[in-house]
Image (cartoon, rainbow, N blue to C red; front, side):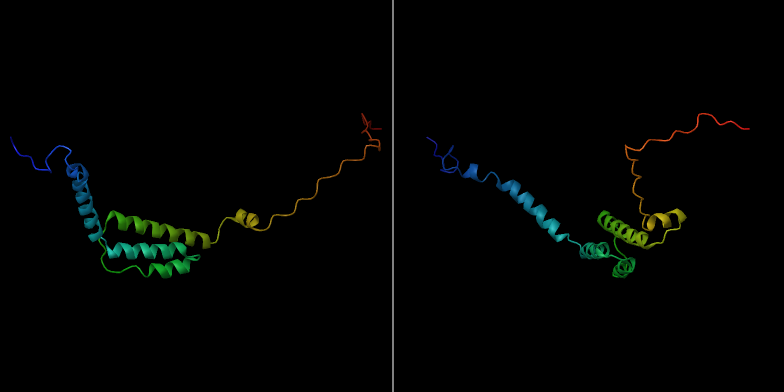
Length: 139
């Protein structure tokens, strides 16, 4: 008779069944540690500046926030390009809102529209209507 250990016995104590998740957990843990270690402070700084630019109400405020962008060489990645594009879009919206219009028709529409006169009241039903002459003859 061959002796079996309690761990290798089928359904002995369930250790193999209960630790079956350990391999996937270890691989996910390795991925998470790697991602946490790859955190880029330049990207975080750009994201903070982008939030400041997009929170501004005037173009001058946005331009002041844009001056906070690091002037050195920044590694071009997909994330940095996306943040830079969004930052410039926010600044462009601020500048477009402050730009005066050159359309002469827009000035009239920008002013308060004239008040519409009240609709004419229909004539009372008791007064007879006058008819226009059917034909006019010349002497």
